[in-house]
Image (cartoon, rainbow, N blue to C red; front, side, top):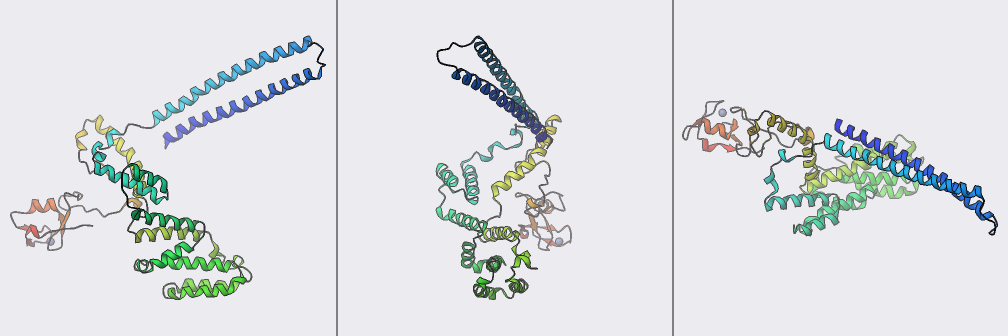
Length: 391
Ligand SMILES: [Zn+2]
């Protein structure tokens, strides 16, 4: 953060200098333009036969000199600006690390399969954002051969979301109707919330839409069990339809936050239905990487200073724990109570027949032949009966 502020201060210096130079330049030019125009007018006013007066030619000469001088000065000031600009570059170099080779595994994206996966994730990221042209170009140039059928759900999602942002509910309503069963299995309230918004829109149009409103209210019949309280509130708002609900205790129904919320609910429920994460895996990875980079660079430096670089050899584990905050916790982590180590892909937790869970390495250490005694309850069992636990 301090680094950002230092660089920002330097940029402000450049901007203020540039602003000053610009204002000064414009003023100087304006002054000389006016002087020259006055002289030109004076000369034009004289009769064509009369000669140029001595004073006039002197003034003209002097003005010419002064303009040349001013142009020279402005050129010099502009040159000086370069040094201030180049200082910003030096500040960036001094305050930010640009050498990251120490903290990444070069071979990560070397093989073809890994590269293809990376390209697919980048492509998916653009599809999620509705940047179809970029995604298609990447698909073509990186030979990803993504099936248009694979792209369609993203595009549909984006179209519907775009419509919701413009306060058009129809595409979302048709989508929920088509996916009603699956959404209900997820316990989604999306369809009700959409109808609720449509109803509020109609109510806000005033008494002339009354018959349409009553007709629309029939849509709520299906939701009577789960949302009776909300439906009562919506019906209550009808009492104020003549004076306008914006002037009634029901004004909160018009809060624009309802529209923001519906976009979130739609994204969450639609992503869950399609088996996708709500956030793009690429942006999550980049955010996590940005948070993890400074401590990793620090620890790498400390390791090099103390010459213990061999400590960080494991490729799928970091030498320190990096807390990325609750939003980035996806899985429970099992720590073996015997070896006091976190489980890994190669050393997963295993469940013994008595129900106690230890890591597989611990099980191998405790086993003698085809017998092992649970370290918690002394039940004797065959180590082969232990089952891998997946969280
Ligand atoms: Zn046991």
